[in-house]
Length: 307
Image 1: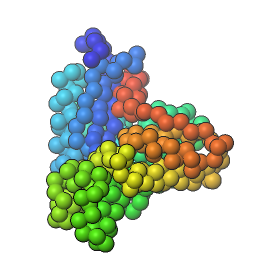
Image 2: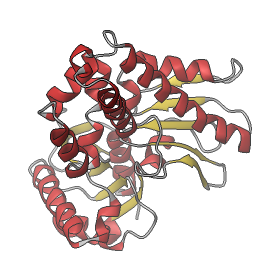
Image 3: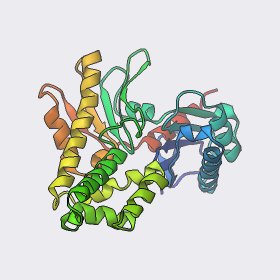
Image 4: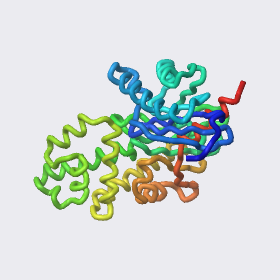
């Protein structure tokens, strides 16, 4: 942890995704003085009583950790599923941190990730976390997207998609040849993470866990890719799905450099390699590790100095 003066102005940045929510505190000069991780959340959870209770509980835990370091003067939070109506979210976060709602800025989590990679108009961000999306912010500040429709509808190439494809393939093979999972390194890794090799275990996992927990099952797929051709194929198809998102924006807005980011994109080199192979040679592509919570913290710290 970087040392800082207790009187320093602090900005709090939050990157809330389906798998986890990361936070960071930054000083005005950009130094990160503290960071942490709590459970994942989505702005879409505010649509139900149970979801709101879960979000409030996560904000409470996050605030306790933050306030143990210092009181931020401003918060910049990027949340998956955020569509612009954030009054209740802003109030919940402000209350937990004993701030005014005017001290809380909310946006889609991808906006922060984009601005950490490009200036407006400069390029396309393809982000693969629990879900997947491609984004372009034009020079007028308008947000353009491809994908990001949610894991139940699509989000090809994201962690949830990888996990679902793995279980789908495992159980299709079981339909054709019961017991075949025992010869599959991927099935062994997946069932170990789930906690059982019977159908009831898979069913309870897929239909009883939240999307973040399901997305983390992609770790087992990536871990078995060197031993199981089926796992490698799924990861390569994930890369092709992510390339499709970049090509959709290119077709609509012209060729620009592409950055691939997100924790799911870093699961295995085969994902980026397959995406690169599916793009034209003329299209520049770079894989980048984005720390959106830190970028958001710096934005918050700067906002806190404005009159």
